[in-house]
Length: 196
Image (cartoon, rainbow, N blue to C red; front, side, top):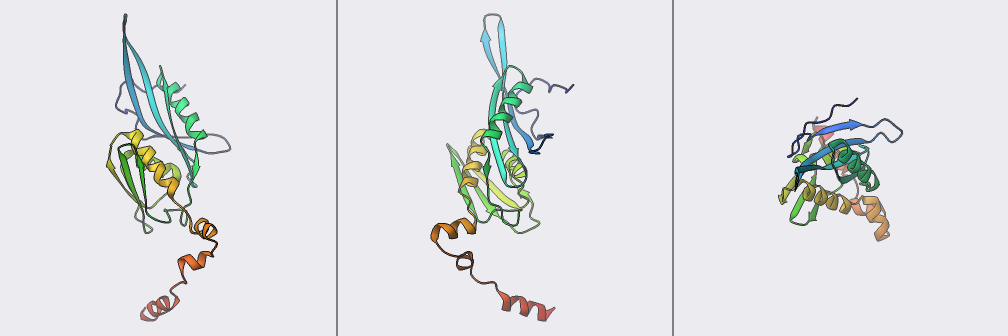
């Protein structure tokens, strides 16, 4: 029997993650949990709102929000919604974005930049959860504007939805991938090899 998290708002369970047993092997990350109180005749009635990010760490990710009278039920609802809203994001070498993108939602804006190997995930809490669930290993992200976790996650998803791979851009323009990227710098590699 799983232990229930203690009551309290402000995200007591931030960063919690679980591996689901099953064929899809999805990673759940609890981004935020908020306790709200409704004042009624007999006192206060508490409810919980959860924000969850779900991903397969191979380029698919989704987010969802759920509300319920109990924390586990709110998390379950949020997880189910996240699985229904999953998107596929093209990754460069399976570790970073192909190009820099910006995302906006409400008062929140984010800038996502692709990086060299070994950079790691340089991002704030809600955005870090999205990148870890997505499977990105090298990215630099900056949140500008709203620090509300919901706005940050939605702005991050807006940016990820704008990310495109060279193959999709080439297909849209009716060109070859090599026409877009140019030829490899073979002479430079040879020169560097001679110096070594």
